[in-house]
Image 1 (tube, rainbow, N blue to C red):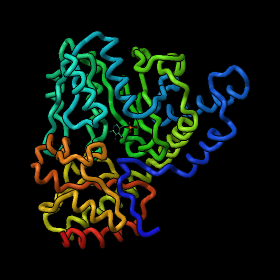
Image 2 (spheres, helix red, strand yellow; image 1 turned 90 degrees about the vertical axis):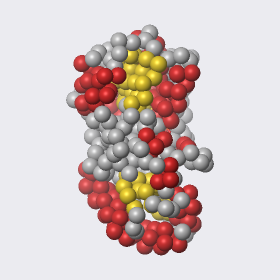
Image 3 (tube, protein in one colour; image 1 turned 135 degrees about the vertical axis):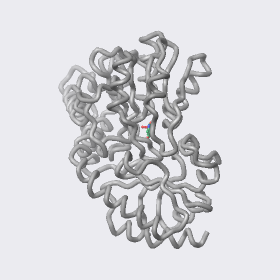
Image 4 (cartoon, rainbow, N blue to C red; image 1 turned 60 degrees about the vertical axis):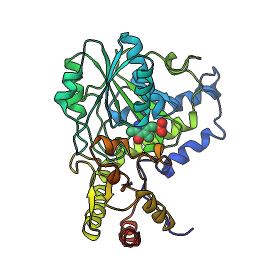
Length: 376
Ligand SMILES: *Cc1c(COP(=O)(O)O)cnc(C)c1O
């Protein structure tokens, strides 16, 4: 294979070798149904429950507060749906910079007659907490705000937000899909009611997610059928992927320090050198309140789609806007909400690293990118 540099870890991540190894027996000999009454099924049940404990440990939850879903999107949708149904209220609060899993859910709810408050962000992507407080109404069912932004890496102050929601007695959901392994999550010290995770964003498999629901918070099923997941999420368990996610949760917990030190230093070196080497480059988003692995850069005057294609030809994978909207000519809704002009938004690329990246790859990228930008 020719040169290949994977700098798009906010879109998806490589499965860690130990995750894959853990999954294989559940795709081969251990194919039993965890709901079956005989030992062959019960042994699979035990493995699923072990994975639940591993995920619970990652966020300091109780295993009984963990529900496996088919993806992060389903976990996000379920939280909003459940809060609306259980409260019988008709208003939700979210932000203009959410992932499509929340953004399009909110738009869909608006079409059905629900009220949605779309909180704005500042030019650095951060949130105004006073505006959040003012937007909470007696008929607000839930506040849903992402922990870390997938495009810019900007972090919302979830500790403060959850305290505000608790004080105002409104349910709070956080889309934490980009957070595990990068920022510590502790649901004992941060009073969120719902929290969503996704396997493939933390070196686990695709097609599996998690919804955390705090003990005592009602959960109304989104998917109806069999009695799996204590009657809260029907459908036979995606066993191998659940086992993989459990292992990935363990790996993420162990890798937290490396992510916050080595990966952060690697990202910072990349970003600072690009700023030095290429004139007219700007960083999108607050550089302090940010994930350690993400760099969203505006290459003023360069078309991001052209740059993306030229870098692809050199083996560099990165992203223009979020993967879910790539292919459309719309500028990123996140950058637009930050007040970035359409021209600059269409000149912006996201580089997102992981602990699988090496300094030598950064060296190579720092040779390639200025040359490619110069040629455009
Ligand atoms: C990827 C992502 C999702 C969706 O997760 P899937 O498992 O792909 O459905 C939701 N929110 C954020 C912030 C994401 O980055």
